[in-house]
Length: 438
Image (cartoon, rainbow, N blue to C red; front, side, top):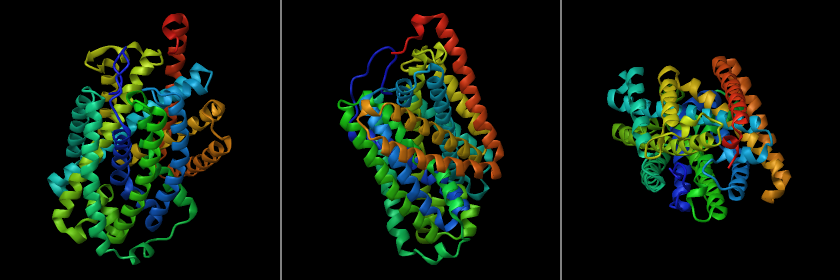
């Protein structure tokens, strides 16, 4: 982690390790976990969803980069909300809801890790039980890793990102030799409504760029390092997503994509590289999803501690168990384990994607209010807000039609965040010295 409880951390990360943190979160949380699910919505046009999602992410990344450069903090978006919204209840509720979205994200990516791991170990006979066993194990291992320190996290990300990108590079080169363009046009046609709704789901694949803002106090020059890392990571990942989605669509039939939706990328290696390719890409997928969980935990653990200090969460979130591991973080991790063991991958994906879209819309609002302090043109902020708002509305319409329980759980999370923050605000009012923001 980049911050220790009660003491500022010495800068230990550079632009490469910060960018690796973001790429690790995005690639593992996106192309491996959601490509198959997204293809079932947009079919042969799924690559267009990644293009549009990359554009929206670019605007959002701009706001994150400008705010992070102006207000470097391990709290990430929590710091943006505290600066941008005068109401403690509003700022705190948004921060808590974002933390819940991170928990859903960690559960989703862990579920994807478990899916690849179980299929690699047991083939098509892999059961939900073994998927959950693999998923639970990786969360526990990476929580331990995140108690070591930000230097260990940064080094781990560089190694993991390097291995998985090398494997994806081999898949791109090999897959291009057997690419069949006719597969893209033979799939069912879809309209813009379906494509934009798919952008909402695939946006989760980009959402990891926010974890880089939590590393702002772990770098020596955040005003230059964080923006460079965010812009570079989003641009690189957008190109990678489009390329991989085209290779998968051009090598795997619609029927196989439906059958192996949760392991679509590994399935794409079978036609050209055989079983050995499937094994290699499955291992890369496990590394990718592991690094994504690693990055999400890095972000959420720092944020939970910051919220605990600010009394936006109970004081347990700053009560140390060992090293930088606190009681509150332990409870949060248990919550992640409950989610991944009791909800399916699709439901978790819809909840996590909606959570990020909602909180990132709020970041646009905070940035608008702080435009003068960040020296940012409001026209750019407004453009990004409108684009993301359209994506959110179309996505939620799709969720309502196909997975209404996910919409209900999203609303429940928002209500819970508001109620918890209301209680904590009243508690802080009773203890004003403990409720003052840092």
